[in-house]
Length: 316
Image (cartoon, rainbow, N blue to C red; front, side):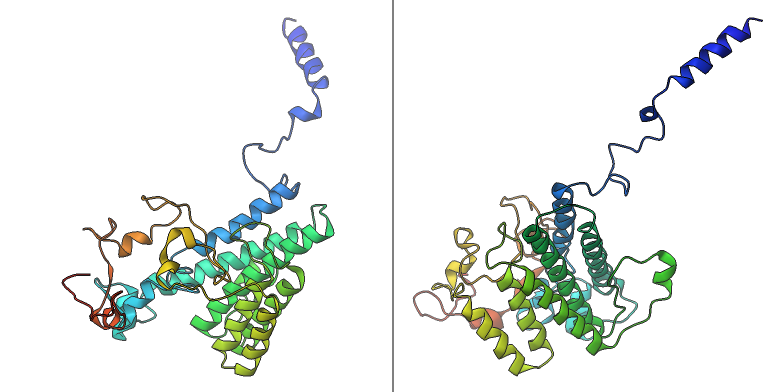
């Protein structure tokens, strides 16, 4: 008899429960159920794609590689048994994970995130011009990834929309020409949708898409197409050579008129935004600015000193 009032109390409590107390999605995590909801979410997804450009296998050893890859040339010396040193020595094989694996996985991470961004644009109400900008950037970034993939591996699987794990297992490689055609197609969508001025410094604009399209044609030895795109870039009347080569390396001259597209980092002395500087700075230890990549005498000799005298290795 004593259980009945308790049972009734529980029953009344349950009947009085609101739906908001049940089956609630987590509010401290991003899930498919609560993302995306607005433009702020779309921009967050876009930033997630751009963030991958800072990966070593994309930036320093890939599209924008001017540091690590020099260690595989007469311009720089790379100590250690790294993939870069093996490239320079002609010893790189499929068993060397490092750059081979990293570049593949990072590039497809860009592809996956860019595809997700494109689908997210269909779920959020945006102004036409705003939506076009995001769409253009998504295609631009996917084009970057596929250009590096095809340049590194030849024909690779083309994934142009979200796929399940089972679908991914059954993908086959496209031909090299098919991948390059997709790169050009992505850049064309970007060129069509992007404005001449990016919404923020570091984001792609029409000139960036044209510049990377020119690069794609250059890497295919299609020089007539290269010249056509160059004419389109010059028609923007936006770019010019910086008057001082030395000045290009100074922080106050970042984002000057010579720059078509570059990666942005936070300034500072402790690797804010990147740890790549640790490979090239002076110091000891592999990850404490240990001069992992150092210029060779061949590179030094290619430069003149400010007063026109021959370089002195004892007085850098």
